[in-house]
Length: 193
Ligand SMILES: CC(C)(COP(=O)(O)OP(=O)(O)OC[C@H]1O[C@@H](n2cnc3c(N)ncnc32)[C@H](O)[C@@H]1OP(=O)(O)O)[C@@H](O)C(=O)NCCC(=O)NCCS
Image (cartoon, rainbow, N blue to C red):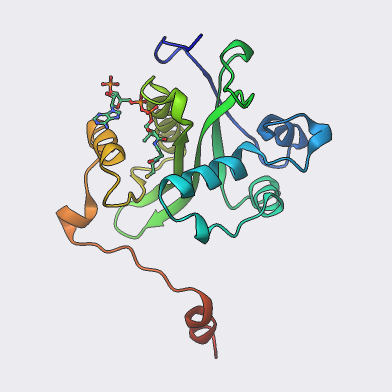
């Protein structure tokens, strides 16, 4: 049976860096099968496929474990988990996640950067994306942040509309900012003394 209740459908929880237990919580399959993809690597891959940029995914589960669970983590995450009876056809109960980290604005101080927000297809439109983003906002405010930043692809109209429906605005349209990047050879070159 497909779940229909909104907001109370799933359990939203954060994972705490440095705690081995959280690797288990993140794992989409039992611990013994640690080689199987965790929700994060599975989700990151699914999100990239949805965004038609799957060829850019180079990260490994090991990278995610190191970077998210070390003493000084590079990112934090929030997981949405449904009860066993609502698991996906593939058997997943962890069906959505948000990945974020703290950043800083020299204009307005502490900020959160939400890198990923993802809900598996069969659970969309049930309040889970909103619940995940709400948790990011809640944790950000509690840490003294005053904005949540993120990007969305220009063709991803349904996600753009979702964000607009949550009171977010388009910084590129309103303020003219472009999202820039330096990587690969250009980055190596830039780093030369
Ligand atoms: C974007 C995404 C995270 C939204 O999650 P979701 O669980 O489907 O959305 P929710 O059910 O929580 O929607 C919550 C609210 O947003 C509104 N909303 C959702 N999609 C909307 C849309 N396309 N247009 C307008 N409003 C929308 C809902 O009506 C609801 O409003 P309400 O609380 O007033 O009733 C999810 O659809 C997803 O994973 N999409 C694919 C991946 C993706 O594009 N991620 C974002 C990358 S930038």
